[in-house]
Length: 290
Image (cartoon, rainbow, N blue to C red):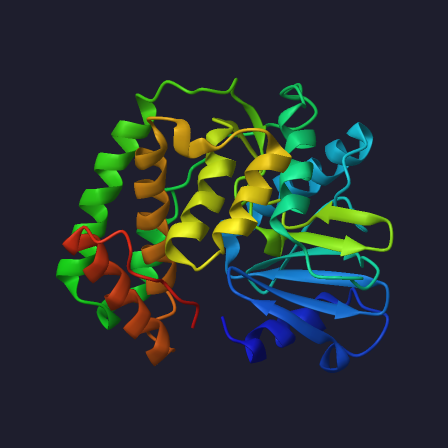
């Protein structure tokens, strides 16, 4: 799905007060995210994401009732338009500053204090960190080396089994699932969580390994990571299971990049760099966006 296709779906959905062509594209990944007036609209890549879109809306309502600062849905149910799930959200006021790791940590403390909701309210699945690997590799098709795809599938299977055997340090429960500062918006009323589609009920350590990996792979300064752990109250690097969750997330991150390889040469280069670093066992190789 490219921007042109996403705008076509947006126009067909007829959920904006003005022309779809005037909506501002905020992001293009698993979803195309557009802003117009007081609304934000997310257009999912394909119909396989419809169930996740439904759950995200249910999660938004649950978080609102729990008083957790998070994005709020403008419509309670998703639409399926031209084979794409479409959800509509209230637009958050403009940011007053960039989100910092400590903002994320404070929100995670709130989320991690929540009990698992009743199933009739919202069903939080386990964190299927590796669940998208097969679909992303399939979307990559012939653009990537079949040997690299086979290598990632083998890693996926190994880390999935190892993760299932982990003994957590923290009590399991609700997690955000993709806990990064980019999923925090600091408006005039303070930080709020956005992108709720990976909310799960699983090991709380999933949320914390993300930032440890950001420090090791993506260039997060050590001082910023220390602010994160201080605000949260614990450093996941003290836990013996961290390597398993890190390896799983690295595997998923490589496969996620692969899906962009057919249409983006820079994505292919980054995918090959990441896979090479995993094959070499070099945990210090820096990974980049593309």
